[in-house]
Image (cartoon, rainbow, N blue to C red):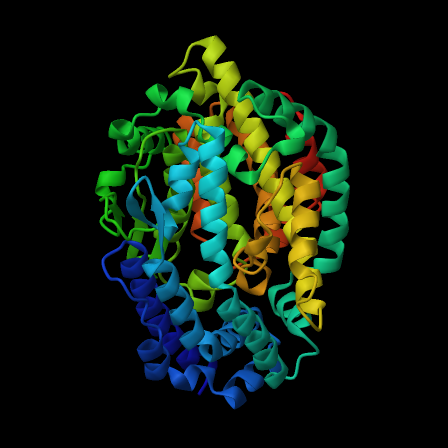
Length: 485
């Protein structure tokens, strides 16, 4: 089939797949059923078809479709085990306070638990359930490597790097520099928060950080009842009326099986874009909603006449950069000081800075770990490698049982890192042109809508050039992380 016919069928596949993930993630159904979708669209991922796409990727559109086809081929080989893992996670429970708590919700309970001994006990129970799920995770990893070999790539790293344009070796070096340059300020901010929570740095766990990150003392400033209104008001400042966007929808309902992580489902870009969040109160609700709203507005404003490769595929670092731009808003001094007094605002912004450092440093360490994992011929020692790398970057004891669960396909961690670099450059440009309160400027909204209309036609590197920079670079990101609020 020709490239346009392939793209048309790819869009129909993505619509069905995103609909399925949406219904599962919203808790509207208990089982993730991928197999029927892949069977209906099996012609997309025929090995000879995908090899032809990979071999013929001369044009930009061809490169994006080749990346989609190769990823889809690998995922189609994994669909049964992916369903099995999802079903096991959905059905798993943890006994806590006399109740069977869903495994997927246990992290929320841990982040709200002020008693350190109880956090530690819950953390151990979570780890025991995670351990029981490892066998399928091992099989999935090994099967992904086998499927990659069928596409004639040297290995999983090479395929992800070449098709994604990620420049993984260079990115790894940049992230090592970032980890070195941000180590001192991260440790200082972390130790201060741990001490206030009655935790010694040498004994601190990732569960302790979850509690610190939760920031319950700021809940009164971030009530869940005003969550959507806060987003609507902020978008209105950019000249965007959320209620008038007939192509978008928000799901805020509480359901037992609903994912604790907010997510955006671009079912048909730009005509049907959905956002789901599980409100519980507190600043993390706002960050999650605003992050996904960045995706939402990007996809909703994408040019409907562009080929599917430019609307739905391409470099996902781009849409993640828009998401990070938006989740930065509820942590922007001018935004925060409108809802808090100066003392509380200063404390909250300091916590936000620590959280930024934590996530960037965590993802930087994950990149090195995932490169090692996918290049390893055996899994022996990888859980220790995970524990040591992430533990060193975060200054915390991390659960080694997560050494496979904490891995996203095709080095999505690299897309996050590239997105953070692009976001800083984009935010700087917005501030230069529209001032520090750019989020209250309709002209800034017009500037963003013009960028969003491009969909993902251009890579993050190319957008950085269009914004007037010499390309993506780690230096602006490091400077931003080091800058006092």
